[in-house]
Length: 325
Ligand SMILES: [Ca+2]
Image (cartoon, rainbow, N blue to C red; front, side, top):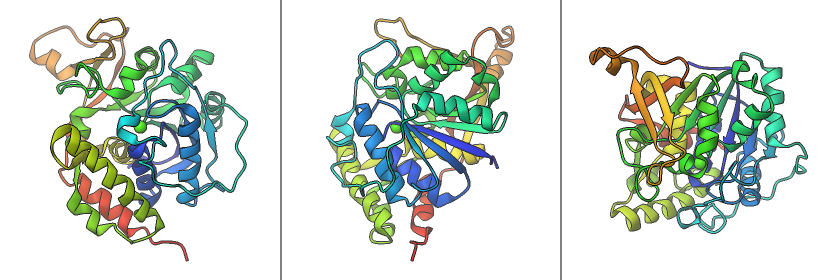
């Protein structure tokens, strides 16, 4: 079980909302800060949603929320409001924050926390990796102070979820940032579509959540929308728990099948920009190829779900969190 201080970098986003709710309900991670990044929605909405989620989850007094980069390092921002709704939360209303907006920039906060918790800090990044890459660019030694980065992104043996079906959304939005991060030497675990698309939630699970608390009512509202989006786009009311799985892996890597190897993030290709290619140590050995290239990005990649009951566990965790009196 991984413990210690955690920073979540997010672009809320429905599944970011689900991930934060799961993190708080599970109570296994010591959340120190939330940093917002542009991705699913433009930064002002991502930040407002992150602050509203902290209010909903009753953590805003303890967990500060900071705004970060408003656009990818080198590209125009592409958002996903067609999935997440105009406000990024499927139109569902979040409570008004009761704490004042913070002035510090997320990128500085990432570096500050890495000094305060040197060798202990886990970063869970569930949006494009722009903030983390910017923090590394300002202070490359960040890579050595972070215990581990767990990021939701990428697709290795399955198609991507952005046109033309090669790249996963978070990497597609800011491939240069992803490349800087994985090539920085920061220990990383990539939780991409290979694993997250196996953690599937269907409508029958909503019955266990409805009305349990103000938080789960909100969850049901956004999941209802999310399931409808999946039905429209894929013909089935079954949605992947992308970001929640990354949070779960930060607490317990046993949720996924992990392999170590070289990870390549394509930034140039006409069709393949944002594609993540992975060559595992095990596959190199099987093919009698030379070992891993330490000059290139070496890290862990989740190639599948290790336990089938993640969606069940996710719902049970949310439903069990006793509402505060
Ligand atoms: Ca996200």
